[in-house]
View 1: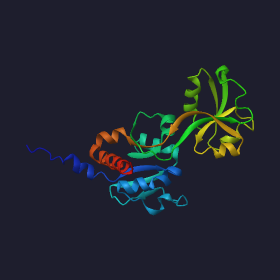
View 2: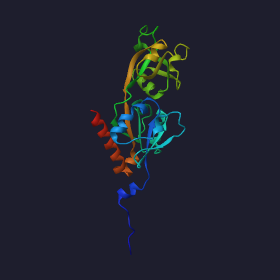
View 3: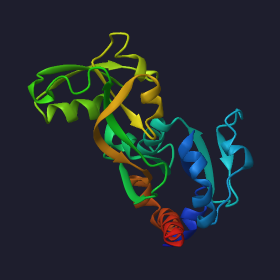
Amino acid sequence: MDLPITEPAATAQADAGPLILAVPKGRILTELGPVFARAGVTPAQDLVDEDSRRLRFESSDPGLDMVRVRPFDVATFVAFGAAHIGICGADVLMEFDYDQIYAPLDLGIARCRVSVAEPAATAGTDDPSRWSRITVATKYPNITRRHFAARGVQAEIVSLSGAMELAPSLGLSRVIVDLVATGSTLKANGLVETEVIAPVTSRLIVNRTALKTQPERIGAWIARFRAALDAAA
């Protein structure tokens, strides 16, 4: 009886179609240019053009396509296997904490921080150690709850996706938790940064199942991005 012929794993992986890399709109995508160049891959020209209505883009490597999504959605695309690999801020990983994601590399770009901020007029007038409850406007409910719970404070969350800086002056919240880069937006709206919850940089992330089923292909891209980091050091 003839046994069925099975193709080598490498050949099977090569026939699986291009890998999908999810990248976020905005600052991270802008700063990715030199990283891509050192990794030896060139995205489609309109990838960084946010007026482009395309969402999926070819790259100079036939084994890699890119999809451009909202920053918070990168981790979801990778966690559920819609994208094999992705690039997103550590804030997104802290907020969602997906078990399906492996983050092998810190790319060291788009540096910022998740911070607590409050009106400059009231900052320092109260002792945070005496708080038992506080209202916080944020797009990071999980990070916020964990942060204040560690101090024995119950955080009542006002969920906003933008214009966080308006919340204290309009009576929506006492403080905000948001992503801060230069602090200029806080200052322009009468707020001051009172506590840094966590520093943030961008990470290369991988779907764990994809890494197990296509180790050579995924591993090769991890190696290329690692080499890109070494070249910049």
